[in-house]
Image 1 (cartoon, rainbow, N blue to C red):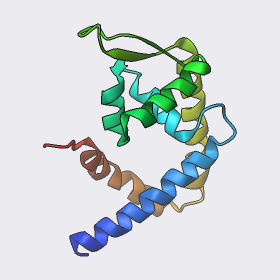
Image 2 (cartoon, one colour; image 1 turned 60 degrees about the vertical axis):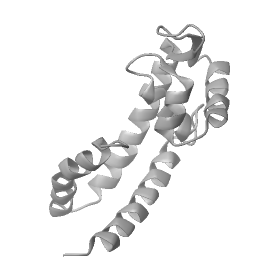
Image 3 (cartoon, rainbow, N blue to C red; image 1 turned 180 degrees about the horizontal axis):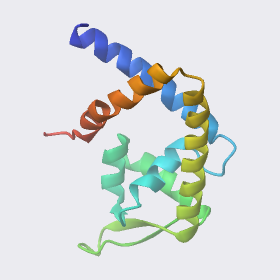
Length: 143
C-alpha cells in the first residue's frame, strides 16, 4: 500500500484533472464551472456571502464578483439575511435552478461517456471508491 503523502499527492493531481475535464463539459454554458458551484451551494436555501466565500475557499470580494455576475444573469438574488438584516444573503432563482440543472446534466453526460470507455472492472473500482471519497469530502474544517 502507498504511503499517505504519496497517495494524497496522486489523489490531488487526479482530482485536479477531473475538475478540469468536467469544466470542459460546461464551457459552452452561460455560467462558469465556479459559478455552477456557487449555484449548487444555494440549493439548500439562501446563504451569506461570507459563508459562500468560506465554502469555496475564496475571499469575500471574489465571491461578491461571482455573485454579481450570477445576479446579472438572473440566476441569484440578494436580500437581507433572515437572522441579521444587516447581512446580505444570496438566494437561487428559478432561472438559477435551471442553469444548475443544465450544468449538472452536461457534466453527468460527459462523465457518463468517459465511464463508458472503461472496462467493467474499472467502473466497479470507481464505484467501490465512491464511499471513501464521500467520507473525505464530508470532512469540514475543525472536525
